[in-house]
Amino acid sequence: MEISDRSTLFASLGLLVLVNGLAIHALSSAKDACDVSSAASATIGGPFELVDSEGDLVTDMDVLTRPALIYFGYTFCPDVCPFDMARNAIAVDLLAEQGHEVSLVFISVDPERDTPEILGQYSDDMFPKMMALTGSMEQVKAAATAYHVYYAKGVGSGDFYLVDHSTFTYLMFPGNKPIAYFNRDKSAEDIAKTTKCLIES
Image 1: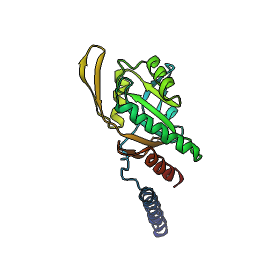
Image 2: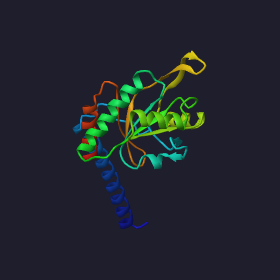
Image 3: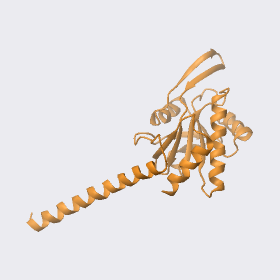
Image 4: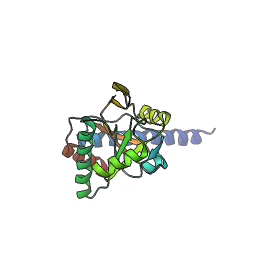
């Protein structure tokens, strides 16, 4: 290789490193500017196949066509899930008022009881804008694993039991890009404000 060729190669590699560094810095700066205390890890999220409330198979590519707030829960949850989803629904409405369309996604961690029909009724009754997803035990486990979601059958017997599960809300962008996650102590206004800032960054 000629000296001039090596110089061009090293210059190109240096430019690539610089561009990547600037991109990472820009993302970090955007998260700092948007007051994101919980920046999602690059390992959160990934491909999945689930079933929607119509019984149709959907993938992550079908779901993440725009920014989305994703929550893992179950329809028989007596208090935590309804509260969290109501908060997320308000956040989505606040964002819509500001010109940002964000999907509201609910993924069941209780596929034994949460059939597509049950999820459809749950969505119609409580959150009509919600995309509700379930699947086989294996499909749900794969999605939960991708998002580092903990869940396990709790107390109860027969069809009457609770499910222990983590309660984070994930903000994902198209292309399986994890942007942030929100704890239960975040209000709808907090989520809307941070999401708006990150979308506009």
